[in-house]
Image 1: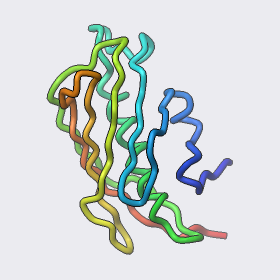
Image 2 (image 1 turned 135 degrees about the vertical axis):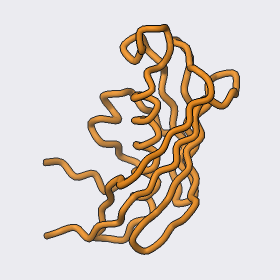
Image 3 (image 1 turned 90 degrees about the vertical axis):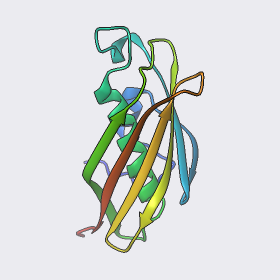
Image 4 (image 1 turned 135 degrees about the horizontal axis):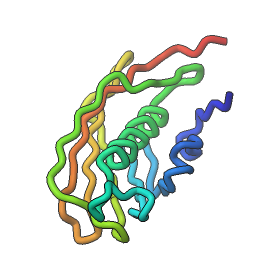
Length: 134
């Protein structure tokens, strides 16, 4: 099993999707994803699950940027509101900022926009902070 504790390194699933990190700090994560045909929902737009995966990866990366040595994280809740579609060929841009950064949980809001700047989705997720077993 591969464990990725550096927020600037991405897990295999993010690489598989093609997520590109633009900015990583404890206060904000920005990433982009080119909306390819294999992310199509069958109507020529980005699949909602791909939108959610992009946001979930941002929240996990943001939490990881705030962890202490020996800690890890897992998503325990996620809610998505969809506002507009992202067409195939466009770029989804995700900007993740904290709503709460506590000792045992962190709550993140990720705004996803498309190339013309239109808001496509807002995802709010809660990450639990775990103490890694040795």
